[in-house]
Image (cartoon, rainbow, N blue to C red; front, side):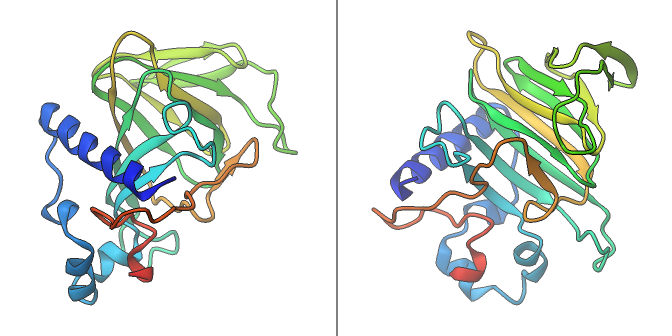
Length: 224
């Protein structure tokens, strides 16, 4: 991805969060130099990779396959800082796919916080990590439902689904209904070791630096 594209996405994301009346922490709009100056004071933010995460999953087509995430809080899987939970806020565009994946350890609730309609497609996984053909039992707002392998559910504003470890899922915004503000409440999040994508993809984009960064992404603090 080009840095100019990421900067544009960041500006659009801030506007959508404001429109949705979802407030971010003050440091969400810090400049790269502000992070450099405050690296020690804000060690938890930096080491737990809080903040902006823009990805096209290696597709080179963000509109088709991509996601905006902002990690608000997070701990470590080894519980070294005592925090055993994480929270994210995401923006999913119409027909914009987050590819099929599961998490080895993380259980998560995916929540439609407002805007459009989120479509989630689900499969059980086999021991060899292939897609199972068995029906999927899943809880939507605490109520268990059974859907066929590869079946979809629609989450409207205020609705949520609980995804246990090793449950394959992919999601996108329903066409014609606008962007979706999506929340995630989960166990500790580790994007470097806990994600398994059914097809090999790039989780963090390679960036072509065609202009200075507006804000740093969560995997860029140590490089700054």
